[in-house]
Length: 419
Ligand code: LLP
Image 1 (tube, rainbow, N blue to C red):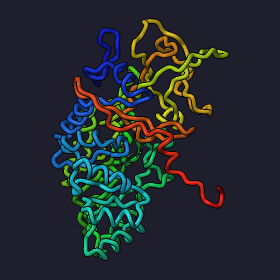
Image 2: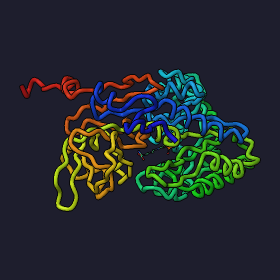
Image 3: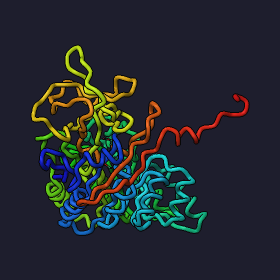
Image 4: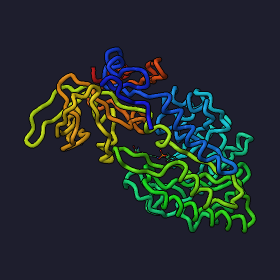
């Protein structure tokens, strides 16, 4: 459910007509609905109330915008970060360092030092080597790093190969069979307080079964590690719950996820930690774009929009589907290909898609663009960095400026020996 609705034939974000934002900010632009964000944050949090002890760490990578993080901080979310940059954003939004979980397969020594100095609540270790390094760095600072060990449960998440993370051939975590031994060795290191296991098998999961299989394996390992005499007080179960991108798709509801969790984790006696991203932010945003022109094609017309793969990379990277709707529909439909202006064929949003009839100058949106949208944007083809707007009822504000190519150009230098 979201707050992007037609009123009087014009698509609004809450109480704000999208043409107003286009006129004042220009296109392309991401538009977020605060009410939608708050609603998703609450539905997820409330669903998990059936579990005894829960820690929620929003996956910052899905939407790191400062205003978005502010809203989630106010809803009591911690943060799951994968770089010092993401950590700085979480802290800037007022998320306590103690509620920050530092994930990622390639944390540098410098990042570990900064996170330790900031008081980061937990490091999710991806390897024995990383654990040894963190213990040494923390010890040298006179600190003890709180950590979990990420396991690779070798479970197929059943999602796109490029966003699967829990198969043995993926780079993430330590092999399931070796995890107990690694846990025992790392537990002996001064400088490290190893308190649990972590896992995350992939993103945009359409079914709960792979999660259930992975959690069941993690639970068995937890019991085995405890039987070896080591403490396991925290189990970080990652993120991954998918959202519908196409009208009519059915996805697991937070309540079903919670019911599965309650069943699988019964008797675990551990704090359950979560790192939801897309399920919180996916529906909270649209990418607002203008039709540059409609070009005749061999089979179907090409609708060339002013948004491109640099603004929304998901279709090009994962063949992802984003619903496309006219802001002021004419009531008729056309079959068309939707593409951006970038000079490669992967800059394609949809082929042979049945869409609202659009013409040059019309506004349209790509829906469900709140997660992994602006955060993955770049400036390929020397295009501007796409701006972001947040709407709250009848109020709205630019929450990230458009960064012009001239600003980026001004950071480049021609060395004297080329001049
Ligand atoms: N925790 C960890 C350790 C992760 O790697 C991720 C996502 C999450 C949590 C959040 O997952 P979510 O709840 O959002 O599914 N760019 C891709 C998605 C990449 C996800 C990477 N990791 C896309 O646009 O579909």
